[in-house]
Image (cartoon, rainbow, N blue to C red; front, side, top):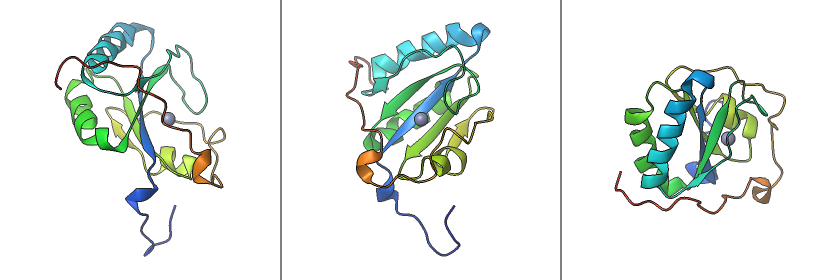
Length: 141
Ligand code: ZN
């Protein structure tokens, strides 16, 4: 976390992730949401993880999206998450802060594991590159 009086620049945000969490009983809702997202937004939808992986303590899939998509996607998720918990976090040189300090939650927050998250990356190139979109939107959000 930064000291008081040293604000971070939003230009440090290379991209965003949204992680959509579900357990077995919630998977049909997560599947429906995934379909709706793919129809509406140009982004990368990640693999299904039915079991916790990395810092995540519940099943989830990831959305990777450009900074420019945030003001379209995040409000839409606010209205359409259907009771699922969603973590939205920036990707900067500080992955631990990105997830634990600078993130926002839609719905109920869930615990995250700290240790898989590096405190500091040394160069912008180390930030996971924004993967190419795998969606082909056909419906305006
Ligand atoms: Zn992430």
